[in-house]
Image 1 (tube, helix red, strand yellow):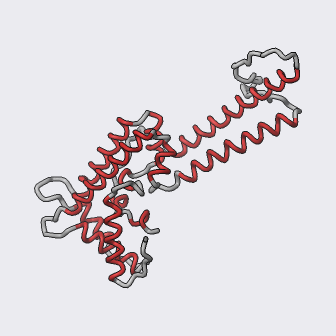
Image 2: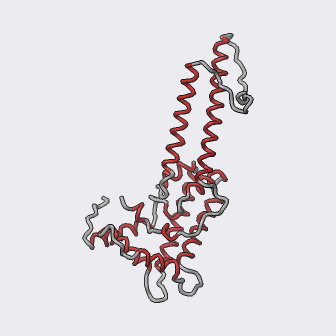
Image 3: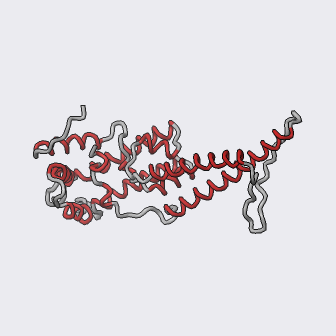
Length: 265
């Protein structure tokens, strides 16, 4: 239950922003609303045409026009069949269904730590893309683990400290157990033998993962991913993820501190 919340806490020091070209949430939502309106207009025109064909009743296979709805003097689409209750009901039903679809998608994308199955479904990834994405996520998570397990210049192990902090958070919730100090170390401490901090190294891993996604996905899929804003190392329930082993380690430590955590079996 706490896995999504406790997934390494990588996001807390992800201070590098996405590229400026990434669409904002508001622009993405506006685009979806515009698309919804267009689909409704097209649907209204198509239903109107079908009803006209049916009313003709000549048995001929009418060729359906593909032109857009007529516009009034203000450039607004004219009603497809004003005063037709049956058509209005059909269009209202279509609007309700499409609106629900858009709202469901927006609700799902409030979660920035989605499970892989949901992530793949929302981005409409193919089986091949899913398999490649899973490999990318697992490799990235392993790289982050390796970075955090690299001893600092004074001999500290940031991964061990992370486990301790997260276990304390479970055993004694609501207290400050030193997260600020730990994050400060990640941001400021340089990996021995380099001029880069642990945080910079971790962000480089995430950047590489995003670049892999961008190469392997369509422009539309990657734009959706950018708009969603998911940290690539925070995708959940990926087969062979090292985060699962880490989570078990955190739970064991929390139990040793007196936390009551049910077994996952």
